Image (tube, rainbow over all chains, first blue to last red):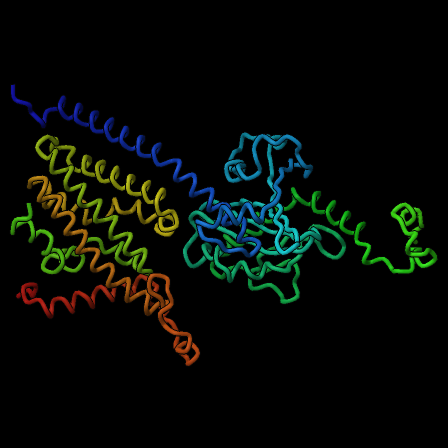
Length: 276
Length: 207
């Protein structure tokens, strides 16, 4: 009985076998390569976090640079309080998946914060995620230890238009963020906005938007506003505590030391003196 | 293994039957991915691998494929190979795969792949088909590299990401040709290459 390759039965059988074989092959390849792919993604995340404080690393150096510079990381809940027992390490939290997950309750959401120590200064790095024109956009913003000033920002995207919205991941777009402030002089939260038509030179809360990339720029502004809002409580507490220990702002004569002999100066004596 | 006939399968696509300049296939990726030399080279290697192996596989099963689903079967095999290439790029050269991003998936739509399957693999034995696929991929690669060098050098003053045009030139008033980064100039460049090739190669001149 000759095999009629153009018969219906054969056609069905052939298609079935082909589909099964291809599916198995692709599944095997995908599973086999997954560890390497995930390692690459982790390294890229480290590189992005570091670039928000202006540290550029190669893929090989990323791991060691990251461990050297990022000293702490913790997780905040939606209210802005530090979570004592987060479900995962801060680094492993997939903020993009959390952003897209419509089912997740606000109470379960977790917001990582990374602390970088570089040249004796601490920076607080906030991962952000939002929506651009064609797909998700994300980034990291580093806030200095005063809780107000931006030390740097890095952004990236999945499928924004090359030359337009995609420019958010270039240095010309990210550099102006350095030195901006996320709280205004009255202490109110004032997130950085990408201003269409260009931000004024003395605008502490604005950067130039991208010409021809309005929707991406607006999405970026919304991303910054919505994400940083969660962290405002933490940063306000940081501002309050940094103000209270900043004795360099106190006038010297309020420390009643001049009436004591220096060799009898002890911690107890100092503490008992009134600071006016 | 490399008989005179098979050797011709590799050398022909470099000149006499170049997929881009003579068969006029694969133009889209030639315009899109040649802004930087590195991307062009990676793309050329990927297309060569995909064309070679899809030719090989299709040729091996050519006597068993029902005629009615011929095109669908080709699509499935090519798509599977492209996904494999994409997964390997993500695992082994992650930063390059990010630069290529959507273009790797678009190899499936590259006319060269399906074109060679229809024109050659379905009517020839596996080994010659594989060689033909590799040859066409390399011929495509030659043109891609040529355009990539021209566009990256004139459009950004670099080659493979390394600055070639010295700063002194920029200080003296030299400006990168921004038009070269856009697809229309790439198309004109392809046209110029076709013009150059036809003027040197008399076999291609139509009467």
